[in-house]
Image (cartoon, rainbow, N blue to C red; front, side, top):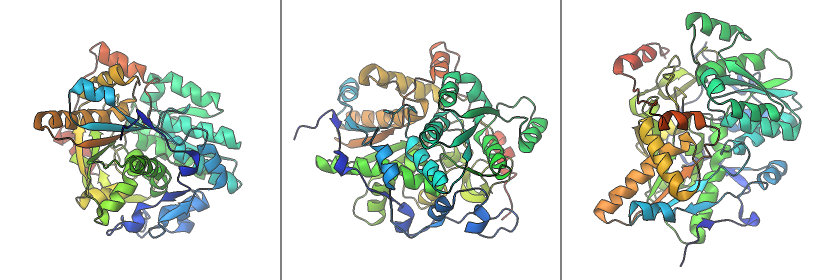
Length: 453
């Protein structure tokens, strides 16, 4: 059977429910802990921070499928189902017998997969009768997506953007403002936690951990607001499962069986969403896929972090999560341009990794941008730096197939486009990008401050 360049599902083939991978995990992810008592967080304790229905999704380890609300589903239909693309041109350029597919999530104005969860979280906030939401954003994809979702539903949106990204990516910032969001560089002087971080780290370029602290403080001190998060949390991986469910359905439509599934890994939303149904089958013994998480060498949570309880934010006001972490005080170097800046990893993915159900590798950013450029020149899409971590690994695996003659099928997630990341591309092309990789001594500073549980 000839495989088309782009495999689309029909509208009536779209998933009508999100899949909760935790329901099928033999070892459940460790619970969030109250930082004061070290006891599992209850719904009532989370209520001042998160929306009620999102809390229920966050704490549910047993329900396999959550129906997608009609209003969310109808919003999805504006840009979903997204295509599964056969990378014929990349295969030819590599001279590989491997078959390469990518699930492209960049065909919406936010430019990434983040909109899948943004509209769901905004919907539940609106349903609860809230005035608005606060959040953080790193490279800006999440903030852009949430501002779009809030504009659609008539909610106020307040975004704390990591300062280095705020300065390097003004156009993404302006897209957020176009959709009505207030965007503040973090750390800032507008919150008590921001002031504290700036006093302790003068001139800091910020981190997602800093921005999370500020967004949580703003939500909990402003009546009618709640905090929403674009990655890491179980609820976000749940919403992003639509990526993997569509990928699974598109592959089955043409009888394609993948051997390797690759996703970039920052906090875990894209990776967790892409691999969800495939990991389900691996856990159940139905299939044995090789699943690879790819992270930046300058922020290597999986490959050099430790599996322990840690604060989810730099200000240490959020619950404790058991995850692979570099320490909540870890701040990536200012030259880190490729996104994926979070100090930890999703508790769900951390448990799967600790159980040996998937692999993780780290790659230096100049190699990531080389892969991005190589992909762009033959596939006609300028990829986001985050996505390009997965591209780098997919190319490496395809080249191994060229050397061995194996005809493996590789699937990776192309989380979005890189048109707002041109400062990073400029640094790469001008030879001003380097591969700073933290030393063991650098990492030891953050790891020495892990809470004693």
